[in-house]
Length: 452
Image 1: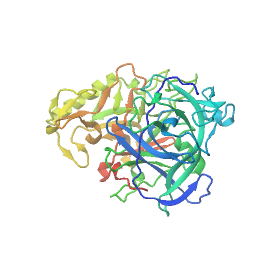
Image 2 (image 1 turned 90 degrees about the vertical axis):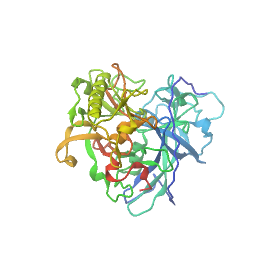
Image 3 (image 1 turned 45 degrees about the vertical axis):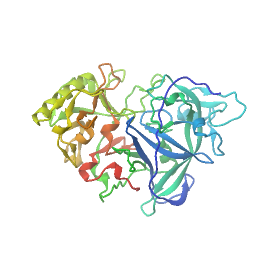
Image 4 (image 1 turned 60 degrees about the horizontal axis):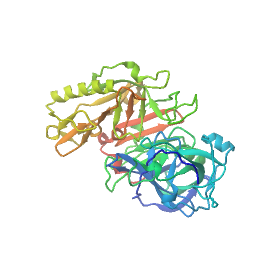
């Protein structure tokens, strides 16, 4: 069997609720119209994780995987899913150009007599990993066909086959900490094995993808898009592309992966936050925390595996201090804290409305660049109460930020709760991040996804 060293990753289960045509295209199909590709996104409200569903192999097996902006590889628990035989699977062999291009982590083999996806010989190494595991679980990189959905401006949604999608097999070891609905991870990191890179290369569409996470786990669901907009969410008829505030994606020159080679850069998504304001009041802390030091510590990144935005303790304490003062001025009653949150309030003292959610102080992450959408003002990610507050009981709502301590790798980690009901576009071609802030302001939400 393939060697395993402990690590964990989580997988999400996703349900497609939209109807689709039976037209099937593949990466080998030549197309003249631009395609947008889509997969649904479901929220696990217990774990606060976001997952999707797709088919893999021939015959197809349905798998559920958690979305991860930072994992080096996609992986699924192949044997648990019964993904043991596929006529379209093949290993990526050691020493091949593809192995080198995809990031080789050793060369692995398997001593069982039958070759199957989870047991291959002379195969380019990879690992299954999540931050809650006890280590890394090694396996071989393999390729197989997976299913997606796509449409052009003139055609309805249809099935699509993406051939030669690279991933690795894990077992039960890396599943610790994952949503119970999932058994794997789908990477969206800044590398060549990520789904967005594979779609862009295979179908010759713009190298960009967008996330729209739902805020509930009801029958409705969110979506992730590949290849660009337009982005429409009912009942609005407005293309949300027009409202994307953009800021540069920056590269951390030091890897943030669990294992890496010297000189390897991070494959996660970082942005340059210049300051933080609460109701327009600056939050005071050491500005150097917002920049990388010589070891790549500091800065701001986005993480779909982090449930709630996590801050360096100095930033956290300063932000909470201003927030609490402003909340008191709004006659919002503070109550005892509920872990992991440090500032909680009586829900009865908070007003609510359809466009902002909880009526609490507004938090702005202010960027370094100017934004045409904001009429030349600095780009800002505005966090209203719908994203900043977490209702922990009918009586208590807490500020959904977490104190990460003083010894954190990254000073600000923007988590899933703060991404919900925001359209967030990662443009790898121009190295720009686009975001709308809360879609509630546009009279819609990510849960309104009904297809493209």
